[in-house]
Amino acid sequence: MGKTVLIIDDDQDIVKLIMKSLKYEQFDVISAYSGKEALSLLKEKHMDFIVLDIMMPEMDGFEVCRNIRKSYNIPILFLSARDSDIDKIIGLEIGADDYMTKPFSIQELTTRIKAHFRKMDRMYKEWTDLRKDTDINSHTVISPLVLNDNTFEAFLNKQKLDLSAKEFQILSFLMQHPNNVLTREQIYENVWCDEYGEINTVTVHIKNIRKKLGSQYDFIKTIWGVGYKYVEGKESV
Image (cartoon, rainbow, N blue to C red; front, side, top):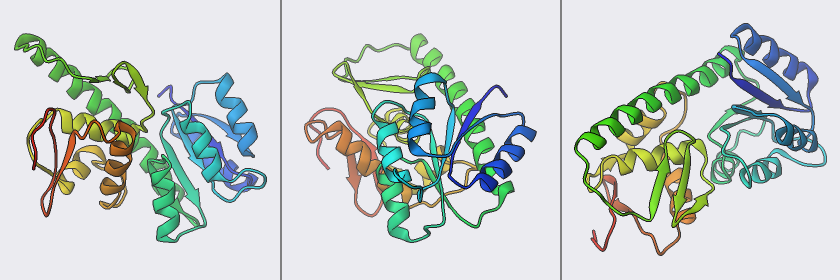
C-alpha cells in the first residue's frame, strides 16, 4: 500500500498488537509512546494516518491533536478508554476524524483504516473525473474559496485553511453540488461511505468548517429539518 500509520499510545502491548495487524495488511507502521515523541516524529517523517490515545502522561491526546492540527491535515482516529459522548464530541471538534473506544476489536480498527484509504482513492478518482468534465464545459467562476484536490488543501483568499481530512471532504462534496440541499444522510454516506462512524458527527464537522471559514463567509446554509447547501453570494434561506 505504501501508506504510513503513526500509532501514539503509552501502552506498549496495545502498540505491538496494532503494529502486527497493520503490518500484516502491508502498512508501514511507526510508533510513539508519548505526545512529545509523536510531534518530533512528525517533523521528520511523512505520515498518512494517526491512531491516537487520549490518556497519556505529560501531554494527553487532546493536546497532541490540537498541536498536530496547527501544522498537519493528517487523518486522526482517537482510540481511548474514555467512552462518554462528551469525550467523543470534544475529540471531533478539535480535529479528529474518527473515534473508537477501548476495549476494541483489532479487526474493526484495521477495517476502519483500510476503509479510509479506499474512500480517499475513490474520491480522488471522482474529483479527477469532475475536473475533466469541468474543463470541457468550463464556466469561469471567481471564488475566494479554492480547494486543491491533489493535496487536500483549502485556501480562502489565498490563505490556507486548517481543515481535517473529513472537513475537506465534506466541504468538497457540498461545493460539488452548489445551491442543492443535501441531507445529513447524503453527506454521511458520501464522506464516510463504508467506514464506521455516527451520523451526528456530520453536524460537528460542519460547525468546525463554518468556524474556520469565519462569519464573513457564510457559504454553508442550514435548511432546518432537511440538511445543508453550499451557496456563494448573498442568497438567504
